[in-house]
Length: 326
Image 1 (cartoon, rainbow, N blue to C red):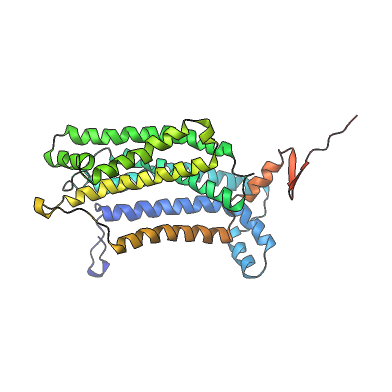
Image 2 (image 1 turned 90 degrees about the horizontal axis):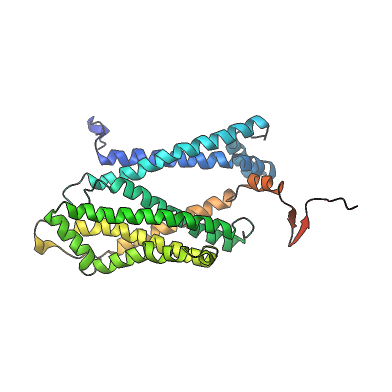
């Protein structure tokens, strides 16, 4: 849609314009939210470093001194940005779903339920990814005091509600597709559910996306078990990846008008390389971020020490409150 060299202006009705606008807005808002939360710790890092690191943190700290006015502005900014991110989150995943919904030539894509379906699916996979990262950080950096079993229990309770809502939208999407009695749409759904290898992927998708993890989360012993929560969250994201695969690939496999041109999709070596690269790139960025910025807000940990009865010094815990004994 962009061709400024020939004087052609962007077509704002094109999905190729929707995506960059939505994603760049989402990225900007998320970056600002993270940055505002980091400012107190950036001021702390500025005061504890020298050389180029001191200059780097001095620029990012924005003159932070920790006075009451700055704390007030930082708190208000975090609240406003968190409230702003909710509608942006909904709009981004709705717009991405509409990229499919406005293409009537591909069976399985033109569905009006895609916007809420993609939003609740993003919450399901996103919260599960948070559980995965929490478990990894707890194991790798021994953050048992910061990431505790009650945090996993609370997220598992949330995931039960989110996953059940997502399952309802999954079946509604199938019902709406069948209700129209469109022959190509019915043929696609039959292929997804009853024909090899799509039926196997569909069964794995249901079991990994809902049946197995939610069945585990119903028990408190599982919700408080870090290892089981880790593996169940991995299952969810495997299922959600298969959901995207089943939405995109079967419809494109049947897009050709002649039946004899339909082929089973087989990913090439380059496609596997892109998939592995995407996981490696995200992992690299997270490790790079942890090299320069704290993953746990240090100022919040200092605030929490005001209300604790014990202080951990080395491997020992000593009382933080001096009590007078008569």
